[in-house]
Image (tube, rainbow, N blue to C red; front, side, top):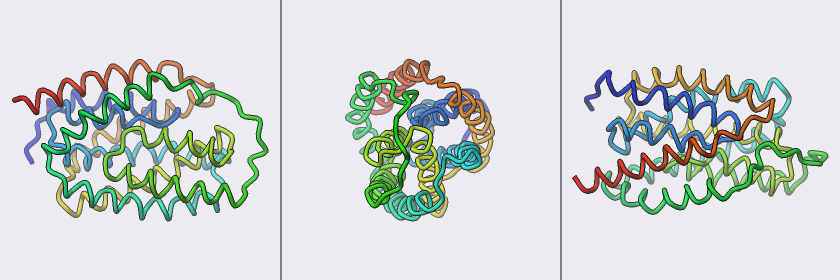
Length: 256
């Protein structure tokens, strides 16, 4: 696929913003995937290349949360194994769907996603009174979240990190900090699995992905620092603006 340097001026700033949001509470893909498509990348190239930059950025948040003790080892490892399985299957499924059909699917998904972002309460900064006890329920929740959201992340992806965080906090009854840590471990694994599948099928523009990944790393580093201070209030309006632009771009592509 041919690409132009000018496309990076659209992609990289949005990737940086997406990295900040992803580190705070997940959902950066709601900005990073649209960034590639707004810049004119076909759907499968957009998803594959986005996974490269996402994995580079997530690795920073992954390392920081692990170092800070927010990532229980056995629970996270269990989630990683099932995330790899789910994401690989999701990515292989996505490659079977045409670019045109994918965009039609997005027309249905985007309004639902925007409604979720608009209506969801700011749970990401809420403190939870919990002992973080790791029980059988916690492991079952991690397995189910890792596999099914891993499939979604490999297939499409935007919002997966947020869903992982909320489900690990709600279903597994972990504190926001540890839920975010486990979610980062799962999300990192889903990115690696999806990259492998898309790369093997020639759907990754590696130079663009690596360049965008540098901006993703910077965004995730800053976002991880904001998370420590509870700074997630600016996330929602930014996501809604980008989703609106993305929706217009998809309609334009389908019409012309």
